[in-house]
Image (tube, rainbow, N blue to C red; front, side, top):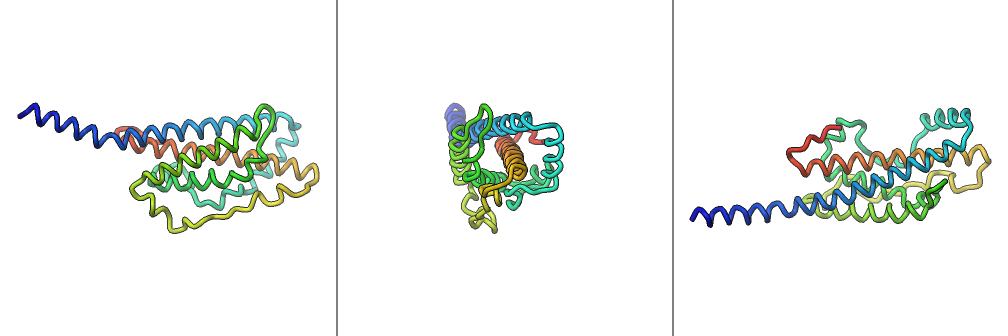
Length: 204
């Protein structure tokens, strides 16, 4: 009798833990992909900065700090404390929107040792992976009250004919914003993945 109870307990444990294992595997893949994208973003940005004069770097950085990224219209946690308080579904949904907002602009992301062909396909794969995680969530169908499609302009006049100085500024802005957003997505997915481990410390 005790052996039967033990066997049933083990079977029950196996069934209940399977979704968590699958979820962790999907999260691990998504986190790995966004980490790679973040590293690519850092590399492109660093290579672009190294091609600039010191004064150009200083001026562009000053302008960028006063400007906004196109994706800033996507409402997201304002600090690490709000990030930690956000639900897994909220973090996944924001990550999905951030990645989606780069599908078109990513076609112009290239520089130095990184080609645009390395970025766009990886963004699409990441977007698909996040969508799978959202659909796997118990509340995946509910999302946000403001979950209607958000159409973002493709970085203002970036694709128009620009002067040399203005083109330099827009390229700097595009690369800096991409790096910033990939860092956000990496943070959100890492925290969301951590939530699957009840005993883990998910502090940032």
